[in-house]
Figure (cartoon, rainbow, N blue to C red):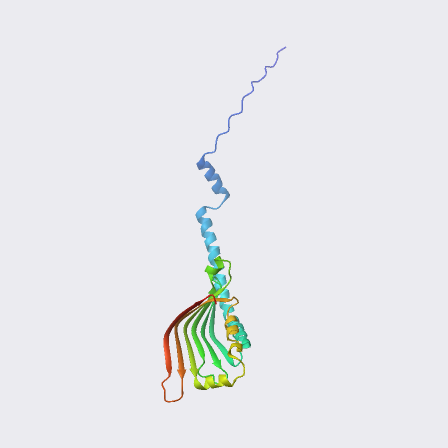
Length: 209
């Protein structure tokens, strides 16, 4: 009777290490190429920015009316007008064009006007934990007529209670920390024989307001 001989047991072959090139090939099959992924992420980011910018165009006019209404509600004896407003969503800032304040009794010319007003977050203060705003006034013009001064004297409401500060605060939701004036002008007109008193090229900066 023949006896079956046991088969020899082979030791398992050691696993071959996966080469770097082969691993890179396998990984590339599981994910997008890096350059393509970057392009897609960039396109998505550009798309989001485009949507935000386009949406801001629909916000400008309603925001202009809202701010103008709030400014006028806070003042006594004066009326504010904003010709145009641009909202900057990426920096959370706004720009007002041709902002004027007219005395109701003598509206022409306006007592105060600004060709351009930029309001934005003061990022340096934000790094210190303070959430405040910067105001930049380009070509502000103060025009005072003697008749307007006489009207001020007749009004029993004190100047500090006319709501000027509240009107500027209504422009931007943050407390004003820095105010910069660029190329300002002040004019005083007396209907007598004297020429108007005019001061031009006013440059000023006030901080920690």
